[in-house]
Image 1 (cartoon, one colour):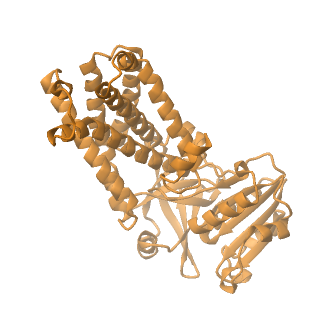
Image 2: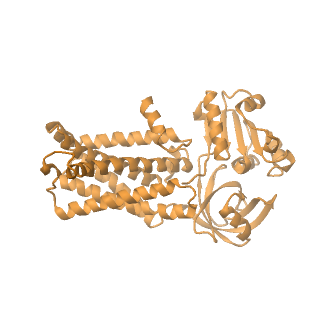
Image 3: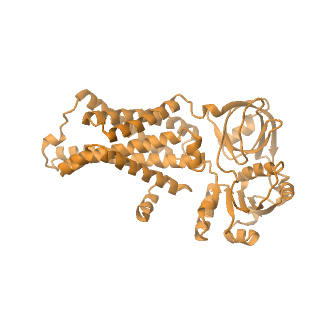
Length: 455
């Protein structure tokens, strides 16, 4: 199994959760094979072992796989807690969702080429076959409308996937165009069901299984189209306090009084401010359960956060959705190594806040990389809080070319065996850390991280 995985890894998006995405793609293909052999398709191929019959059944098989990829991607987009937990967090789920979209595009391209390439070659005089092989004997209206739906779905998927890969396109444009995928799915579903009916295979075991999968995808599409994703987790909050640290970090305090809010330290929510039409994910820095006050520490890193600094004010209404995430610090290790870079300190702030009412019974090392000396770090009382909760703080000043490396971690905290590692920081640092850990033969099951790349 190693060779196929290595080939696929070079095709799909580079990310921490690559193997999970490849596993789900593999399971989807195996499901496609199961459905294929549960229809008359395999029997027909065995009885007519010729090129055009192979073409016909290859078209059918790639269509099955495309629908499974698309349905799985649609279900993941619903933010269902059970699915997010299985994928180790909503951020990992989005990574798998993206790779499934790419897999669907590849499968759909093969489906389209297998359908039309022989016709192109025949018309160009490059392929000599019986013309009857290329003629259709099905219900003309349903067949033609199904082909049209498939053609629309194919070109829209290709265009939308190109948009997802162009990171210079603003996030709000990406998010707006991405919503079209739900409509595209309905076109693809229409084509798939009509293809089954054309073959009179809708009542075969494989046909019933495929229709059930498509039915799940249609439900997911309608939930998305009607903007009901995460609806049960949404509520209104109000800004009650704003603090600014070193001109580039904003502490926003939201009152969630009279709201039923379930939360664990390390989780994040989506916040939709009055000046923005799109929600953005932010880790909860702390939660005062008695006063029902949520704290968010937000760094000025782009257009949206810059506007937040200039526009947000006390009294503003904010829509909150969540909480999400599996960065919960819950494991069986007695020793934990925390690594934070810049504003990636926020989930660790939340855990330290948790320790204010719950005793820390683990040996914890916090490696914190930031621009500036220890007396300039955010939050100002971090060293004191760590000391009170038996957490050893090791600060690294990047302005002095100090870096957190595996050797540095081992020097300060001991061997990485019998320890879990928790990371939150920028993506480049994360990729470097991952390579170092693999080189050190670290058990990757013991690495925990959150990423906020939602595209």
